[in-house]
Image (cartoon, rainbow, N blue to C red):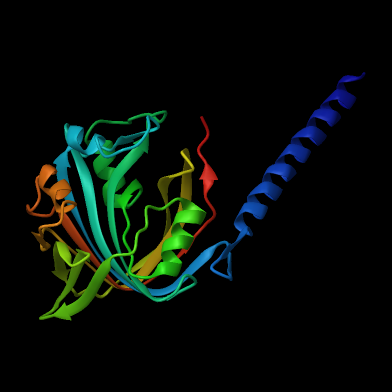
Length: 272
Protein backbone atom coordinates (compact mmCIF):
# COMPACT_ATOMS: atom_id res chain seq x y z
CA UNK A 1 0.00 0.00 0.00
CA UNK A 2 1.36 3.42 -0.92
CA UNK A 3 1.97 6.11 1.72
CA UNK A 4 -0.64 8.36 0.13
CA UNK A 5 -3.23 5.56 0.20
CA UNK A 6 -2.41 4.77 3.81
CA UNK A 7 -2.68 8.44 4.72
CA UNK A 8 -6.00 8.60 2.90
CA UNK A 9 -7.36 5.62 4.81
CA UNK A 10 -6.15 7.12 8.10
CA UNK A 11 -7.82 10.43 7.29
CA UNK A 12 -11.04 8.63 6.35
CA UNK A 13 -10.95 6.65 9.59
CA UNK A 14 -10.39 9.81 11.62
CA UNK A 15 -13.25 11.52 9.79
CA UNK A 16 -15.48 8.52 10.41
CA UNK A 17 -14.56 8.46 14.11
CA UNK A 18 -15.23 12.18 14.41
CA UNK A 19 -18.59 11.79 12.68
CA UNK A 20 -19.47 8.90 14.98
CA UNK A 21 -18.48 10.94 18.03
CA UNK A 22 -20.49 13.93 16.81
CA UNK A 23 -23.46 11.68 16.12
CA UNK A 24 -23.24 10.19 19.60
CA UNK A 25 -23.08 13.67 21.13
CA UNK A 26 -26.02 14.82 18.99
CA UNK A 27 -28.03 11.74 19.94
CA UNK A 28 -27.27 12.32 23.63
CA UNK A 29 -28.41 15.92 23.33
CA UNK A 30 -31.66 14.76 21.66
CA UNK A 31 -32.26 11.95 24.17
CA UNK A 32 -35.76 11.77 25.57
CA UNK A 33 -37.20 10.22 28.71
CA UNK A 34 -40.73 9.19 29.67
CA UNK A 35 -41.52 10.58 33.12
CA UNK A 36 -44.98 10.10 34.63
CA UNK A 37 -46.55 9.91 31.17
CA UNK A 38 -44.72 12.98 29.86
CA UNK A 39 -41.81 13.10 27.42
CA UNK A 40 -38.77 15.10 28.53
CA UNK A 41 -36.39 15.86 25.66
CA UNK A 42 -32.81 17.03 26.03
CA UNK A 43 -31.70 19.68 26.58
CA UNK A 44 -34.01 20.82 29.35
CA UNK A 45 -34.67 24.55 29.15
CA UNK A 46 -35.09 26.99 32.04
CA UNK A 47 -36.74 30.13 30.71
CA UNK A 48 -37.25 32.07 33.94
CA UNK A 49 -36.18 31.54 37.53
CA UNK A 50 -34.76 33.47 40.45
CA UNK A 51 -31.93 32.22 42.61
CA UNK A 52 -30.13 33.18 45.81
CA UNK A 53 -26.83 31.53 46.67
CA UNK A 54 -24.16 31.89 49.33
CA UNK A 55 -20.67 30.40 49.47
CA UNK A 56 -18.96 29.37 52.70
CA UNK A 57 -15.38 28.38 53.47
CA UNK A 58 -15.42 25.04 55.30
CA UNK A 59 -12.88 22.47 56.48
CA UNK A 60 -11.65 20.57 53.41
CA UNK A 61 -11.23 17.23 55.17
CA UNK A 62 -14.76 17.41 56.57
CA UNK A 63 -16.12 18.32 53.13
CA UNK A 64 -14.32 15.35 51.55
CA UNK A 65 -16.37 13.10 53.77
CA UNK A 66 -19.49 14.13 51.84
CA UNK A 67 -18.09 13.09 48.42
CA UNK A 68 -18.86 9.62 47.03
CA UNK A 69 -16.29 7.44 45.30
CA UNK A 70 -12.72 8.36 44.48
CA UNK A 71 -13.16 10.32 41.24
CA UNK A 72 -13.63 13.76 42.80
CA UNK A 73 -11.85 15.93 45.32
CA UNK A 74 -12.89 19.23 46.84
CA UNK A 75 -11.44 22.40 45.38
CA UNK A 76 -9.32 24.01 48.07
CA UNK A 77 -9.77 27.74 47.70
CA UNK A 78 -7.21 28.17 50.46
CA UNK A 79 -5.02 25.44 51.95
CA UNK A 80 -7.32 23.18 53.95
CA UNK A 81 -10.43 25.22 53.08
CA UNK A 82 -13.11 24.02 50.67
CA UNK A 83 -16.21 25.85 49.41
CA UNK A 84 -19.78 24.92 50.32
CA UNK A 85 -22.55 26.47 48.20
CA UNK A 86 -26.07 26.92 49.58
CA UNK A 87 -28.75 28.02 47.15
CA UNK A 88 -32.51 28.36 46.81
CA UNK A 89 -34.13 28.57 43.38
CA UNK A 90 -37.67 29.51 42.38
CA UNK A 91 -38.24 27.96 38.94
CA UNK A 92 -41.14 29.81 37.32
CA UNK A 93 -40.91 28.65 33.69
CA UNK A 94 -39.07 25.39 33.21
CA UNK A 95 -39.50 22.25 31.08
CA UNK A 96 -39.82 20.33 34.37
CA UNK A 97 -42.48 22.63 35.81
CA UNK A 98 -42.93 25.47 38.32
CA UNK A 99 -41.25 24.48 41.58
CA UNK A 100 -38.90 25.47 44.39
CA UNK A 101 -35.51 23.88 44.92
CA UNK A 102 -32.62 23.98 47.39
CA UNK A 103 -29.07 23.15 46.31
CA UNK A 104 -26.36 22.06 48.73
CA UNK A 105 -23.13 21.59 46.79
CA UNK A 106 -19.35 21.55 47.04
CA UNK A 107 -16.88 23.03 44.56
CA UNK A 108 -14.90 20.08 43.20
CA UNK A 109 -12.39 18.93 40.62
CA UNK A 110 -11.62 15.56 39.09
CA UNK A 111 -8.69 13.91 40.84
CA UNK A 112 -7.19 13.14 37.43
CA UNK A 113 -6.92 16.86 36.69
CA UNK A 114 -3.91 18.96 37.57
CA UNK A 115 -4.35 21.05 40.69
CA UNK A 116 -2.78 24.05 38.96
CA UNK A 117 -1.23 26.87 40.93
CA UNK A 118 -2.01 26.71 44.68
CA UNK A 119 -4.35 29.45 45.95
CA UNK A 120 -4.11 31.66 42.87
CA UNK A 121 -5.52 29.02 40.51
CA UNK A 122 -8.61 28.17 42.61
CA UNK A 123 -9.29 31.83 43.41
CA UNK A 124 -9.10 32.70 39.72
CA UNK A 125 -11.49 29.86 38.85
CA UNK A 126 -14.01 30.86 41.53
CA UNK A 127 -13.93 34.55 40.59
CA UNK A 128 -14.36 33.72 36.89
CA UNK A 129 -17.11 31.21 37.63
CA UNK A 130 -15.08 28.39 36.09
CA UNK A 131 -15.76 25.80 38.79
CA UNK A 132 -17.50 22.43 38.88
CA UNK A 133 -19.82 21.22 41.62
CA UNK A 134 -20.91 18.03 43.29
CA UNK A 135 -24.48 18.37 44.53
CA UNK A 136 -24.85 16.74 47.93
CA UNK A 137 -28.54 17.51 48.45
CA UNK A 138 -31.18 18.84 46.06
CA UNK A 139 -34.66 18.86 47.65
CA UNK A 140 -37.61 20.13 45.61
CA UNK A 141 -41.30 20.62 46.36
CA UNK A 142 -42.82 18.88 43.31
CA UNK A 143 -42.96 15.16 42.46
CA UNK A 144 -42.47 15.40 38.67
CA UNK A 145 -39.19 17.29 38.77
CA UNK A 146 -38.05 15.00 41.58
CA UNK A 147 -38.47 11.86 39.48
CA UNK A 148 -37.10 13.50 36.34
CA UNK A 149 -34.00 14.80 38.10
CA UNK A 150 -33.26 11.44 39.71
CA UNK A 151 -33.82 9.32 36.60
CA UNK A 152 -32.21 11.57 33.98
CA UNK A 153 -29.18 13.03 35.75
CA UNK A 154 -28.89 11.13 39.01
CA UNK A 155 -29.57 14.30 40.99
CA UNK A 156 -30.26 13.60 44.69
CA UNK A 157 -33.76 15.06 44.55
CA UNK A 158 -36.38 14.38 47.20
CA UNK A 159 -39.72 16.06 47.83
CA UNK A 160 -39.64 18.30 50.92
CA UNK A 161 -41.44 21.42 52.13
CA UNK A 162 -39.76 24.51 50.65
CA UNK A 163 -41.16 28.03 50.90
CA UNK A 164 -39.51 31.01 49.21
CA UNK A 165 -40.73 34.55 49.84
CA UNK A 166 -39.58 38.17 49.97
CA UNK A 167 -39.31 40.17 53.19
CA UNK A 168 -37.91 43.69 53.59
CA UNK A 169 -35.57 43.56 50.61
CA UNK A 170 -34.42 40.00 51.26
CA UNK A 171 -35.35 36.61 49.84
CA UNK A 172 -36.15 34.09 52.58
CA UNK A 173 -36.17 30.32 52.11
CA UNK A 174 -37.62 27.88 54.67
CA UNK A 175 -36.75 24.18 54.31
CA UNK A 176 -38.62 21.59 56.38
CA UNK A 177 -38.99 17.82 56.31
CA UNK A 178 -42.21 16.35 57.71
CA UNK A 179 -42.74 19.52 59.69
CA UNK A 180 -39.25 19.63 61.22
CA UNK A 181 -37.19 22.63 60.10
CA UNK A 182 -33.81 22.09 58.46
CA UNK A 183 -32.96 25.76 57.99
CA UNK A 184 -34.11 29.27 57.26
CA UNK A 185 -31.80 30.88 54.70
CA UNK A 186 -31.89 34.45 53.41
CA UNK A 187 -29.87 36.85 51.27
CA UNK A 188 -30.32 40.40 49.98
CA UNK A 189 -32.61 40.63 46.95
CA UNK A 190 -31.14 43.34 44.76
CA UNK A 191 -29.02 43.79 41.67
CA UNK A 192 -28.99 45.37 38.23
CA UNK A 193 -26.17 43.50 36.51
CA UNK A 194 -26.51 41.27 33.48
CA UNK A 195 -24.58 38.01 33.57
CA UNK A 196 -23.73 36.52 30.16
CA UNK A 197 -24.33 32.83 29.56
CA UNK A 198 -21.58 30.53 30.77
CA UNK A 199 -21.27 26.75 30.80
CA UNK A 200 -20.43 24.82 33.96
CA UNK A 201 -20.30 21.17 34.97
CA UNK A 202 -21.88 19.26 37.83
CA UNK A 203 -21.16 15.66 38.85
CA UNK A 204 -23.58 12.92 39.89
CA UNK A 205 -23.81 9.13 40.11
CA UNK A 206 -26.31 7.19 37.99
CA UNK A 207 -26.76 3.62 39.24
CA UNK A 208 -23.38 3.93 40.93
CA UNK A 209 -21.57 5.17 37.81
CA UNK A 210 -20.08 8.70 37.90
CA UNK A 211 -21.44 11.13 35.30
CA UNK A 212 -21.02 14.80 34.51
CA UNK A 213 -23.65 17.17 33.19
CA UNK A 214 -22.99 20.43 31.38
CA UNK A 215 -25.38 23.26 32.10
CA UNK A 216 -25.39 26.87 31.01
CA UNK A 217 -26.96 29.85 32.70
CA UNK A 218 -27.18 33.62 32.50
CA UNK A 219 -29.18 36.26 34.30
CA UNK A 220 -30.59 39.76 34.40
CA UNK A 221 -30.99 41.67 37.65
CA UNK A 222 -27.96 40.06 39.30
CA UNK A 223 -26.27 41.33 42.44
CA UNK A 224 -23.16 40.32 44.40
CA UNK A 225 -22.04 40.94 47.95
CA UNK A 226 -19.46 39.94 50.52
CA UNK A 227 -21.20 38.16 53.37
CA UNK A 228 -24.86 39.18 53.58
CA UNK A 229 -26.40 35.73 53.98
CA UNK A 230 -28.16 34.54 57.13
CA UNK A 231 -28.80 30.91 58.00
CA UNK A 232 -30.70 29.64 61.02
CA UNK A 233 -30.39 25.89 61.56
CA UNK A 234 -33.35 23.82 62.68
CA UNK A 235 -33.97 20.61 64.60
CA UNK A 236 -34.01 18.10 61.74
CA UNK A 237 -30.95 15.76 61.69
CA UNK A 238 -29.87 17.09 58.28
CA UNK A 239 -29.19 20.43 59.96
CA UNK A 240 -26.37 18.69 61.84
CA UNK A 241 -24.48 18.31 58.55
CA UNK A 242 -24.20 22.09 58.42
CA UNK A 243 -23.10 22.23 62.05
CA UNK A 244 -20.33 19.70 61.32
CA UNK A 245 -19.19 22.02 58.52
CA UNK A 246 -19.04 24.97 60.93
CA UNK A 247 -22.29 26.75 60.06
CA UNK A 248 -23.87 29.12 60.89
CA UNK A 249 -21.02 31.46 60.01
CA UNK A 250 -20.34 34.47 57.82
CA UNK A 251 -20.70 33.74 54.13
CA UNK A 252 -17.78 34.34 51.84
CA UNK A 253 -20.03 35.75 49.09
CA UNK A 254 -23.70 35.98 48.13
CA UNK A 255 -25.26 36.15 44.67
CA UNK A 256 -28.81 37.09 43.71
CA UNK A 257 -30.26 36.48 40.22
CA UNK A 258 -33.70 37.98 39.60
CA UNK A 259 -34.29 36.52 36.14
CA UNK A 260 -32.12 33.50 35.47
CA UNK A 261 -32.30 31.32 32.39
CA UNK A 262 -30.42 28.15 31.57
CA UNK A 263 -30.12 24.81 29.86
CA UNK A 264 -29.28 21.33 31.17
CA UNK A 265 -27.68 18.89 28.73
CA UNK A 266 -27.85 15.10 28.85
CA UNK A 267 -25.48 13.46 31.35
CA UNK A 268 -22.22 11.98 30.08
CA UNK A 269 -20.41 9.04 31.66
CA UNK A 270 -17.18 10.12 33.33
CA UNK A 271 -14.18 8.74 31.48
CA UNK A 272 -11.83 6.64 33.66
